[in-house]
Amino acid sequence: MLSSPAPSSGKLVLIIGPSGVGKSVILQELRRRHPELAFPKSATTRPRRQGEGGDLYRFLSEEEFDAFLKKDAFIETATVHGGARYGTLKDEILPAIREGRTVIREVDVQGFQSIRINPLFSGVPTPYTLVSIFILPESRDQLITRIKNRAPMSEEELARRIASMDRELSIAPLCTAQVLNREGKLEETLKEVEAVLGQ
Image (cartoon, rainbow, N blue to C red; front, side, top):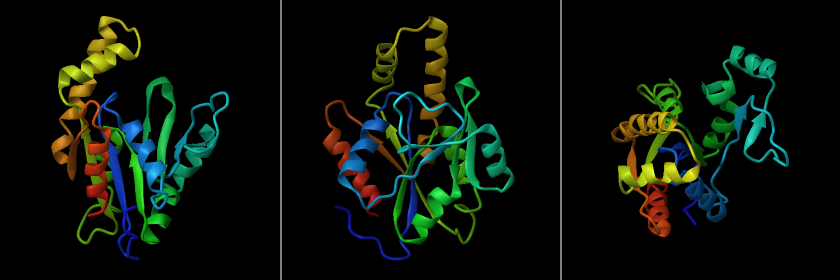
């Protein structure tokens, strides 16, 4: 278990990395091992899938999402493939930080760029502490192989995904820490992530 946080030691930790690098497995293990960590729900306008509970997402109508936008209730928002909107609500993040907890949130590069310049997490003094962990693959070729193996796709789609992957990898130096996720070495990866969380 990670040491219990002091009242003022709450922080937001962003997990970032290209598709296929293993972020979901890392987050799943962190959830299992560390009940003291907070894992906020992501707000989304996408339809609820069959059999899907409300553990990971807060499902909103387009009107509800717009109402939250008007109230400045989001830390960041993004529109993704299919036109669905996603967002990080302040009330899913800030109360836990104020309690001294570490909040873990997976975001894409767009979300990371928005949060790192948000006045809540930037400036002097910074109201809230932000830590970012970029999960790196062993190699670019390994990641391309994983993308190919996930599902059949056209050469055009593959080229688009590789270009997106390269853009995402270019963000790594901007993060607080970079953790290499080696094939078959999940335990080592988790120890490195936990070391960053415990700082």
